[in-house]
Length: 302
Image (cartoon, rainbow, N blue to C red):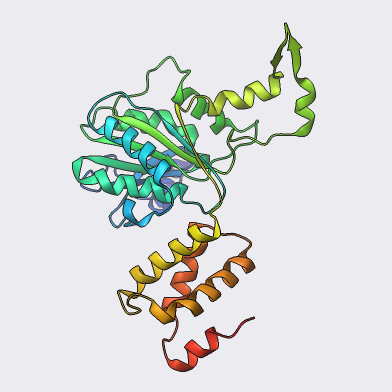
């Protein structure tokens, strides 16, 4: 065997071993699944089926009537084949942005709605994702959770093109729903205000601000979320206590007072009154030992 042949054989062996280390990527996704996560390994991307998505119902989301009405209406239009908008859900942390997307997906999944979760770093592969699903009969929501960018990130430009700006039209069976703590998805600096100019009596923002607004402006529907009041927070706590305890605490009655006190202390320690904080408290409370000793310990103030 010549040296060249021997070298080629060794290279082929190394390639075989390397391929075994790569993820087992099936070019044909499991379309029986209702939810997917886009996974990427270098330049290889594929849809990973999620057979047990989070089971959240719209009725589980309290104190969000305005937000629920807006996203439910937009999604219903989309499912009926009518025109609908990409949606940006923005606002305070823990107020139900991503939960609302999951809940509206669950409301329509049996009617053919599919959810694809795409990480921010994988948005550069949006054209590949769209090519994969554009011919499907199902309708898809591309879900980007906790989205924010630095101006230099390449995924930021890919998302702008997919929303509006590419020569290729976005498939009619696809909408993009994104959540963010930032209304404009990009950091904003005080120094940028100095770029503003008044022309003919009108205020014109500087180029830096215009560039940042141009991304969020491509979402046709903005839905804002704000911190809960104490009353709203306690309503959510009571809902989840009842739901997670499966009626063990009944109608709360005299048992509600120590729960309320503990829930307020929990929110104070976390520095947040939100749906997420309420849900976390309820899981902690219901999951503890319900013995009289443990109950008495919980009722002691900090």
